[in-house]
Length: 543
Ligand SMILES: *[C@@H]1O[C@H](CO)[C@@H](O)[C@H](O)[C@H]1NC(C)=O
Ligand SMILES: *[C@@H]1O[C@H](CO)[C@@H](O)[C@H](O)[C@H]1NC(C)=O
Ligand SMILES: *[C@@H]1O[C@H](CO)[C@@H](O)[C@H](O)[C@H]1NC(C)=O
Ligand SMILES: *[C@@H]1O[C@H](CO)[C@@H](O)[C@H](O)[C@H]1NC(C)=O
Ligand SMILES: *[C@@H]1O[C@H](CO)[C@@H](O)[C@H](O)[C@H]1NC(C)=O
Ligand SMILES: *[C@@H]1O[C@H](CO)[C@@H](O)[C@H](O)[C@H]1NC(C)=O
Ligand SMILES: *[C@@H]1O[C@H](CO)[C@@H](O)[C@H](O)[C@H]1NC(C)=O
Ligand SMILES: *[C@@H]1O[C@H](CO)[C@@H](O)[C@H](O)[C@H]1NC(C)=O
Ligand SMILES: *[C@@H]1O[C@H](CO)[C@@H](O)[C@H](O)[C@H]1NC(C)=O
Ligand SMILES: *[C@@H]1O[C@H](CO)[C@@H](O)[C@H](O)[C@H]1NC(C)=O
Ligand SMILES: *[C@@H]1O[C@H](CO)[C@@H](O)[C@H](O)[C@H]1NC(C)=O
Ligand SMILES: *[C@@H]1O[C@H](CO)[C@@H](O)[C@H](O)[C@H]1NC(C)=O
Image (cartoon, rainbow, N blue to C red; front, side, top):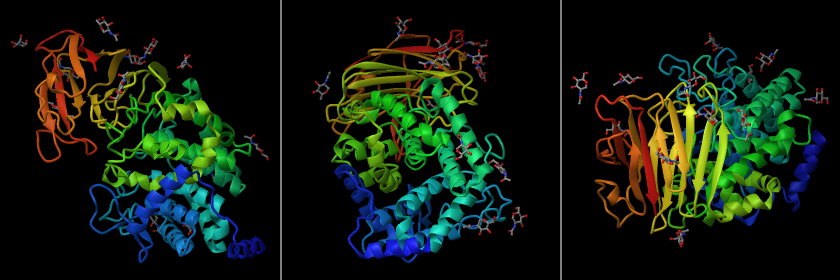
């Protein structure tokens, strides 16, 4: 080991290429992301400034800093390696060391935060501490160790391994339904990150118990995935990207072992892209709905991690508008993961057939996708998914029967079970999406048509739709469907009162709150008073 280190340091002095080869597209994304992160990096702290809406006054941020350190090692110019070393020492130095606490082995959200578990700073899962940071940072540490260990001093290599060991032990404390945690196998992205970190670390330490835990996680994931070849956390433009990231690490670094996730990851990645590429509409630069856990209503306006995969595979212009600089978009902080996506993208591409890449580049023609996804315990039965895609209009829905409102994460702002998107004359995208308020929905889709029914609803039920504002130059006020730019929307049937209540949920005004920084028109349809009908609404659309 010692000799090997001397040898690699000696090579460093020469002209040996130490980085992962990137395609031009991946390199462009890498460079654009690193340029911004260089500007917000604070070398005195060895952390990035906290770049997250709303912008924080002063603090730094942990997770993105680790992502950036992978980028520094890949770039390896000037002081890059030394800064990466500083970062890794700092972040791992602050990793939780008390084995008795639920957040053992986790990292800080930001380095200035008070100590979690003190009277002033109670432990609140997903707030004062985030259990998924073990997965996000652990997976990044694996990439760093696998690709760049030869650039790092021996004590930092050892620190990474020790960090991953504690991380894995701490992550084993997570049990869905216990202590406020929600890590069930259906929480695809977080579950996959734990699976990969536990499987890799167990093998590295020859720890049979850890390896067995990784195997069990992998089998539980596959039991759900292989029902219908879909992630339980279905078609989330952000989190499908995280699942693919975790799976790529599994395929690349465990693929030649007998680990179950290593053996299956490449196949699972292909199957995910098989349906994601059918849901992608290159004309609209969006994945058609329905979406589990989305951070917005139009991918032209927020940064989704799937967008970074598409960029790295087929180029920026396919997914981002020239006229919308990344850093003006909401969730722009997620672009900080780009160095890692770029580093993994060349290997990732080798797993995909040309047919999938060509569907990403251009829309292949009108088609209907049908599938199923199952996310227990929220789903009482599998969801039925139907999405009709045409060149300039897509309609995608879930039929579901769930134990909670708002899908698996019980969040109506991110669960979008019925999504209509269309292309407008200025090349922007309109949307008309159901805001979920019920535990069950029956949805039927045909070309230019959508029927929605609440089987468990009653006279108090409402159908609330989130409607995009018109583009600049279009009507600023919406008083009815006639005012909507680029799409004719008509209520053609159903048991609701066909005249909606219309309100505006604006950035600085209106009568309701914005959602994920998107302002929108709220169109709410109610039932006639005392109606005993099953609530339903039927639409026809025309471009
Ligand atoms: C570790 O956490 C436990 C449980 O909160 C606490 O009782 C104990 O004092 C802590 N140990 C140290 C060394 O802080
Ligand atoms: C790992 O946890 C142990 C306690 O089990 C602690 O002594 C050690 O310092 C931790 N290592 C790191 C890198 O945090
Ligand atoms: C073995 O792994 C399980 C699951 O990860 C964990 O709960 C348990 O504490 C581990 N046991 C030992 C002895 O490490
Ligand atoms: C999807 O899974 C269900 C079980 O939930 C099964 O009955 C059905 O055949 C599967 N469909 C496809 C297309 O694989
Ligand atoms: C993988 O191989 C090791 C021996 O190299 C063996 O102990 C283990 O049971 C195998 N695991 C699986 C899942 O086949
Ligand atoms: C879709 O919109 C583009 C741009 O406006 C237009 O050129 C094309 O003809 C439209 N396609 C269809 C099938 O309507
Ligand atoms: C999905 O479709 C199947 C077959 O048509 C049906 O039995 C099931 O009830 C549907 N599930 C939901 C949640 O609507
Ligand atoms: C939802 O699922 C539960 C459990 O399978 C079943 O009892 C109920 O009838 C279903 N409801 C609807 C509206 O399909
Ligand atoms: C919607 O419901 C109407 C009335 O029942 C029916 O004629 C139409 O075919 C349905 N559309 C779809 C897409 O199922
Ligand atoms: C409708 O159902 C909800 C909850 O299921 C209940 O709170 C409400 O009173 C019901 N409304 C009517 C008019 O029955
Ligand atoms: C939409 O407007 C209705 C009133 O028409 C209101 O009750 C509801 O809370 C609003 N929903 C959202 C998501 O803004
Ligand atoms: C609805 O029912 C309530 C109580 O039964 C009654 O007072 C009210 O007049 C009814 N409203 C309408 C519009 O029929």
